Image (cartoon, rainbow, N blue to C red):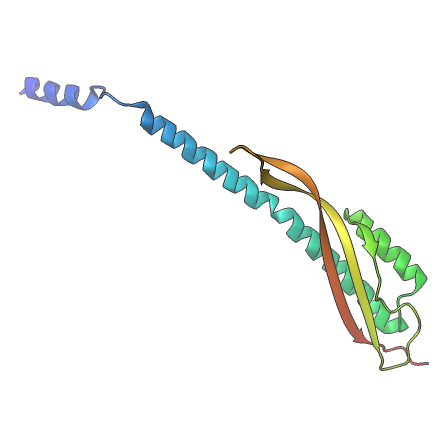
Amino acid sequence: MWRNINNKISKLTKKKDGSADTVVMSLIAILVMSVVFVYFISSVVPIKKSTDAEGIARKYMLKMEQNGYLTPDNETAMISDFKNIGINNIDISGTTLSQVNYGEDVYLCITYKYPMKDLVTGNGVIPSFQNVDKTGHIKKSSTSKKAN
């Protein structure tokens, strides 16, 4: 009886001949999963930047409603707020910069660039990060609440 039990235990604990295929495939799978994970994590930065930029634009759009246009002081403060979150090269072409009458439309048009790291594959298989400037656009319109 003990002999049968010992034979069964030795069969269970006996090392089996293996191959490197299993190890190599596991390592490749881990590498691929790591690259995908890093890619998704790197995608969070542009989403956060655009969300922050939309918040700033909304803040100054509300001020534009009250004043009837984007005042020079608000323009300076808005550009400063954008720089504080890492957004530069701000262009406000198309924005209402002069007083409009009550009930007329006011526009806030912002084009900006922000630096980010982009995952690229060059000539080889190994991916790498490259610094690139992404361009964002924000267009908002509302009605002036400024009574003359």
